[in-house]
Image (cartoon, rainbow, N blue to C red; front, side):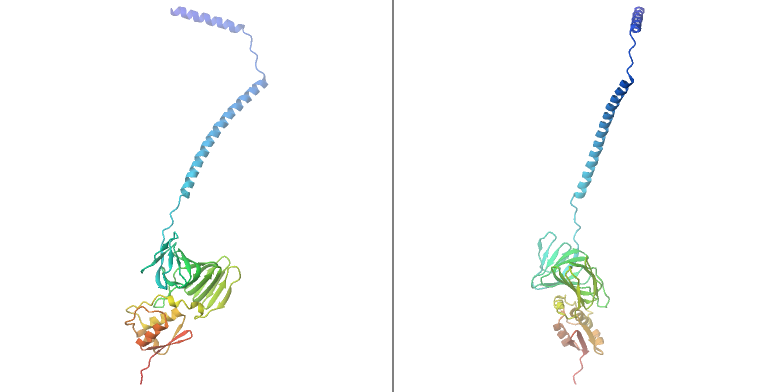
Length: 340
């Protein structure tokens, strides 16, 4: 049976061969036709490859866009503000309580003692309120009536309106301390160089007076250094004017009235109190022979918190062997002679 099947296949092959031999030769396509066909085929292939590449690029661009949006969303998330830090504390209030506004614009209660100021807050005094604040880095910062400030950072405060006085402070041994504080005004930032100075601002009008030391003003249109005994006035739009200002001139009048009381310690002496009163009132001390030693040897016994006023001098004179005379910008001190 297998042999018969092989014979059938062989017969069919021979028949197919005879048929192919009898078929005419197929004409070859012209060269132009082959080129046209090749170009058509190549164009179709190129289009398919281009479409595939475009799909790949769109996928890459979509992925990149997704990543960009994701990264942008991370950066656009609300960042937590730096935590507020303490910059000052209320040392003295003369008149009604000042107004303190927190960083959210809400008023804070001002009552009791140990009121602290934080960055982001603002403080305003009314028409009959003056305040003294202890700056966290040392020194005394004071505000006159109708003043408003904002605590920008632990090294800078912005004076919005009114009058601000700053005393960088002098230790009882005479060593100077230089706390970091810049006051931002409409004409620039005022920085002290170991000093007592006063800034008065009303709108764009600014007056800066220096009682001791010197200050620098750095602004877009104003760069000045002002020394003791000088006052500079400017509006920022014109040239500043400068003039002399005395130690007892009217702009200083309110400063001593809000000075924090002199803190009496067990080792405090009359010499320290006299020097403090003179500094707070802008006066110099002139000691008669023997008076300096007497003041240094006189302890402050049964004295409590004392103000920088003539009443304190009167109390000191009645309780010690010292006598005082206020003459112009001087405090004259002498030793009381025994009555015959």
